[in-house]
Length: 325
Image (spheres, rainbow, N blue to C red):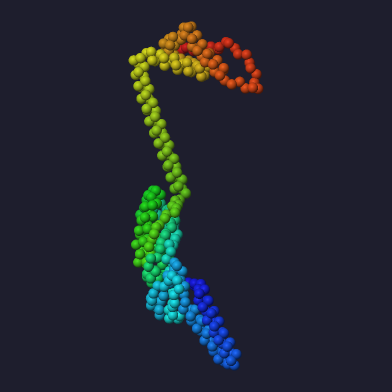
């Protein structure tokens, strides 16, 4: 990998400039051939010195080989090598690196094809192993991550995969870290980004969830009706031993119905006899009570400024009570 080395270029220019100045002085001393030799020597020296000077960034480690054998790790900062004899085949980045990997159309344990996307966070801890133990450690890490993901998917149920992404991420981190440890690489974490299932299966799962919610709603409704029925049974036992309470309850129900609806209400004749509505006195009392409530409501209601006030009628319409004989 080519690296910009401004320091080496500056040194090359300085040495070449000094050599040029000496060659010019020699040329003025009436020695053209010697001046040319001085300039050539200065050029070679400048080229040699600039080639031997290297600068590594703070996050880089340079793997130096001498005649094909590992010599040392250099950097960060300024260091020197022997040109031609020493070589730098790798510059290892020691920062945290992210690698995306996927597993397409992979069958889960319950034979469901899924597409899974994940991200790997890793870091080189031993640059020497990363350079000498594997040909291309970046490509090797990507392939190891993908194969580990396929293995985990094949051993996991779809429901567990959709619900427990953290668990799958931890398992993947452990597997990939074991595979990359001999290469001097440490896996920091693995994050499962997305799990895609076929559209038909997604629709079926949605219908299943909707049916489950409807079932729960019906169960809750049935339980509510059972509780209401139990309360009605308890109330019936109370009214059976207390005729006065039953009479007051029946009067209240009839009164509320007539007050709200003002329509014909059909009640059994036995109820009318029990509430004493068959006589004129009972009917008149009920009618007067309803009329008073209506007049009170009309008096309390606001009258719009643009409306005309109509004279109120003192006659109260008497509701009809149908009696089944």
